Structures are given as structure tokens and as C-alpha cells.
Length: 69
Image (cartoon, rainbow, N blue to C red; front, top):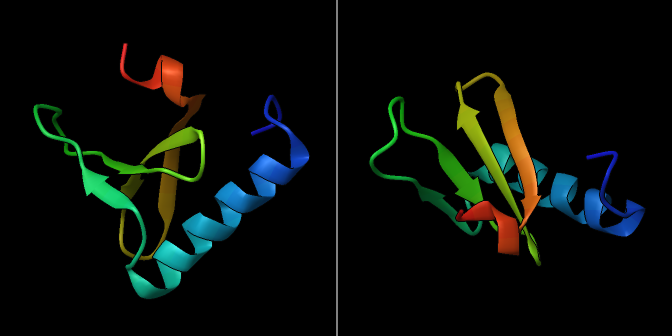
């Protein structure tokens, strides 16, 4: 999160907090990955993470052009 701009980082964290609180958002379960990861799309960035119920483990935050390589 330190590599991306402040505004983008704050928006990403807000979207992730909204998902954690309500379970809603632009989140999708990625297939063909074990264990299954979730992907959140805040703007031009992609956050890959695990939802452990009580806490969320962030794996990667990358720009969309690098996310699917």
C-alpha cells in the first residue's frame, strides 16, 4: 500500500473495510487457486486477499495492468 498514491490507498482501505463490515462490494472468488483467494477491485487497483472471518489477510495490491499476468 505504500507504493500507491495516498488517495488510492485510502479508497482501497475504505472499500476493504466496507467489505469486512457488510460482505458487499466488488469482490469475486478467484478460481483455480488453492486455497481460494478473493479479489477486490477499487478503481484501477486489484487487492487479492483471504477472508478468515475475524480478520482479512492482504496478499497483494497491484495495478490492474499487472494483476492478471
